[in-house]
Length: 161
Image (tube, helix red, strand yellow):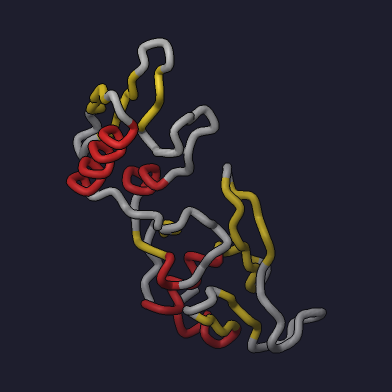
């Protein structure tokens, strides 16, 4: 699939991230919203079938807008159904895992910061560019959050906000 072929069958709205059909195909009519929700690994995303082949909508959105089809596209806000162009970025697995949601065990609401009640402190951790885990103990949530954010900025983590 290339950009020209894609634009023949689908229209993409970069603001909303929604694809609509330009052609009739069986029960599908011109103007209908293309694709449906699909669970890929641990994430819900949009999948579109074109000529009996499945494509992920975020990858098609990038192809439609830029003409490129990179190996991996990430969602900045971590919502796999939000395919607005502003929310998409070229990434790789190493960078994309930095954008993960909070672990269910997290007790502070901040990635990489946990409260250890038995020690009455906050343990902060982050993985640097070389894969080394840096750790720091802080005694206030504010100090822990500041440390984590400063390290995210220095290591090039993506903001989800």
